[in-house]
Length: 106
Image (cartoon, one colour):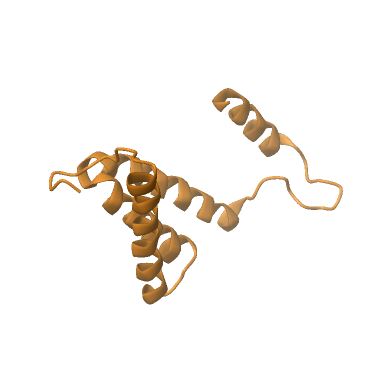
């Protein structure tokens, strides 16, 4: 899948603009949210072992809402905490899946 994704990405960047005059892949400033999202996911991966799942997913959600989507702090914090709590309930409580923990045990 990764190889196919790379091939599709390369083809999309090499194609001329579509018949409607729209480029198939964003360029310039329109590319910034994509790069911010990829950076946020990379940060999530790097912090997962140190912070554990709950804090890492809360930080990722807050980053995506505040930086990428430009939401206010109230909405960002409410959704980040709610998302982490909902994912904990779904995976840990209902499904019994072991989530990565931090040094404090959560």
